[in-house]
Length: 140
Image (cartoon, rainbow, N blue to C red; front, side):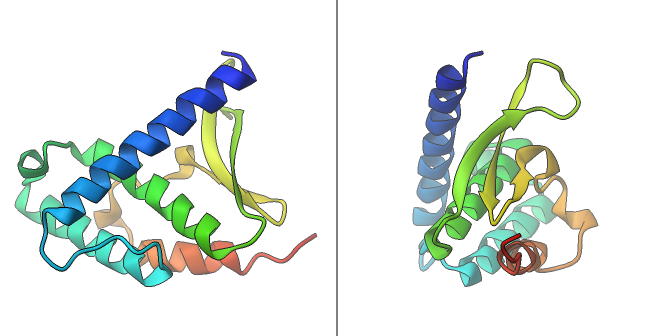
């Protein structure tokens, strides 16, 4: 895939994931997406509640897709709050010829391959802590 094609593909993927996550949150009274760091706490709690009750089908999604949506939302929160943060496309570290999306800030990047799979195996407030860790990176 060319760089241009990869950029278009991942842009459309991000756009689709944000639209679906927005629709899910809009269907829950009092649950707006406001792109703040604190909203990451709410998204994670929603994920954990859906996972605990195994109710992915209520929102016409799967666990894996919701995890991808969380990663995209995480990236948008980072970009919204940090001047200079941006989406990037890079070669997949394990799959030759494949590309992966991530975000970069101060020469530090986090990619979807390091995304937020199975948060139930991670500490509570993991997304928020990752945001804090990512945003504390100093310029090299």
